[in-house]
Image (cartoon, rainbow, N blue to C red; front, side, top):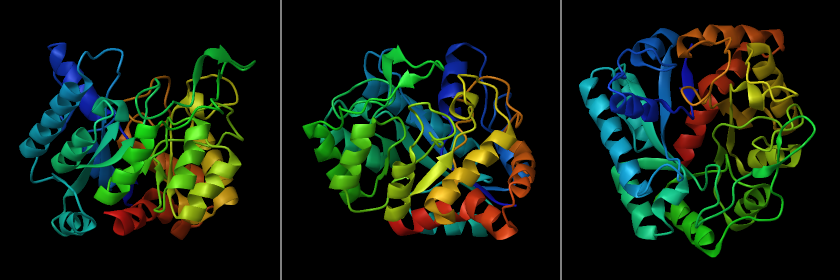
Length: 327
């Protein structure tokens, strides 16, 4: 079994644990993701998000640089087991050497403060994927939650009207030029369609599910799924219960994940689906308690009548195919 996961928040958790004087390490820890757990499950690649909460940081760009320092420190301490990737060839080389590939991503384009020079700096530092927003409006775009409005199931209402700003359009153009994959997770519905209309390359929704099964605004409706698939992009299944269940319930089951997988594949085809766990960024009771337990998801996918070759595409091949085209 091989695994490629497009989203986890482990580096942010490691950095915050240092601040609490209870440091966790990437090699082995009490979090969802560490090297020992990844090796047990057969990981070939993990995207590590540099997650920024704009409301908690006085200087978000300085903070993201601190996270990047932590990322490289942890990789250096475990250089025999894991190595950063900046190109698809790096992934192939790591696999030859028996190493896990680590791809740096940015979860909150607002850390750039609308300055293209900061985006270019992040690329130079190794970032190869970025969301335009997290949960707050910024200089680039609006997020997909109207945080002051909820529906009858307790879900935030999607933002259908406000999309990318003028700076946001400048950013997506430069991201495609540089080779930073555009990640539409957390982006408003209007922003999603701005991406579709104003970009040419495939893009990703690194950690999002199907809105038809869970009406949370963080999820994708069927038209969005088809748009991503039609462009050759990939959607990463998110394991968070609030993005899986019919009501606002944070408990997560592999059966629910597999049902979202079935719906996304039925809607967009097998080539558009991958993994985007959101490990170390989610709470609630998780049936897959950490990344070592991927066999539970495989069993659930088999019960949804996915074939072995289809499961391989979901677990790693589709993500690697996307990176082969874009990195």
